[in-house]
Image (cartoon, rainbow over all chains, first blue to last red; front, side, top):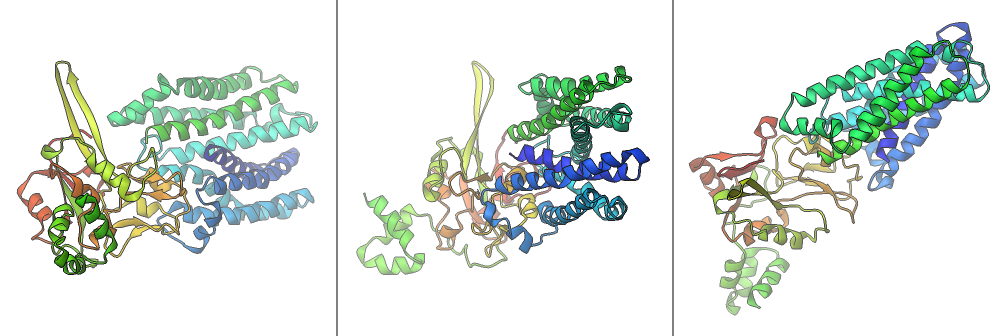
Length: 272
Length: 230
């Protein structure tokens, strides 16, 4: 449940950032900005419901709003997520009624909130020193990049399935997705190096990911199916303009991003 | 059984002194003192206390009586523990060795668990002991992951975080924590480190001691005498 929240939270933050970026892009990226703006509040509300109902006492949730504790990331997160929910809903509404201009202005307010929402998922785990996999400064950024990738993938999926022509390959998102996936692979690689050169406990976690019980999920699903395969398809089949390729690549990317979350949560919990 | 009766009586009274005065004519005082380890002047209910434990590993025989006493004291559900004994096996047959490491909340002076709590449910109570307010805990489980000693768990029945409380309800009445009280080898010694006259202070002064994961800077208040493998 919490892994799914990490996915939807990242998707919401990434969706807003993608929409903001596309809003200031070329003329023909308006439909991309509109689509990803709509994704944001939907993903966020699903994420927030998952977050609240994973608590032992979901109906004591309001306590996090009445007590503010600066040392607790959740204390900050609750307020930022509430604000982001409001801003992103208004933002999506403005795009819906074709007021892209005012939406762009509101976007400046939303960008820091969206950034925080994306990295917040990682911040939550980062402050837990009990598990070497979670206790990593790279984790929030891996989650941010994953959020941006998933937002791009969902936008491509939505636009392709609603009948928009992929005029440029993948609505001009091809290079953007490639760069992010490579960045994610580099960060995951450096994380592994850090784990191997760390304590005996962290080396054991790295072994568990690479050759142990999580190797099918981590190496197979996350790295090969979710990152390398879509990256290869994007690079090799650049001029391919059918509808199957964008859908296939998006689904693979989403599988990859989802697997990252599940691997981090479950592998981290075991090493706890 | 005299032992059980005495234990039950002791739980129902408000203070040890009152109880002893009241039961002296019945001749039970000696029995009570024999079954419930008295703490002397340990508790005055003030913030200047620094409660903790010294565990002499040379005296631990790995009988798990402390784990059982703790389970029954708090009615801890199956599958989770507030205090337990970690057993490590070293070497290859026939040169093998078992070591025992009793564990409990380290009552850290710098607590990762308290700082991550979003509602203030995790806090230092009036005895200066790291504890959890049951009515404020939302069950997010963040403190469970934050504790570097893996001392916390989410109670599967109450769905809130729980952990060893150093038996403050017993200490406040002048008797030792359940695990200390039951320890056959007297491996567990409880007391106030701020009191230079206390047994724990003198043990730490006169022995070579170590804490768990000192490199984290959490300032644990559970000291071990003897070798251990974490």
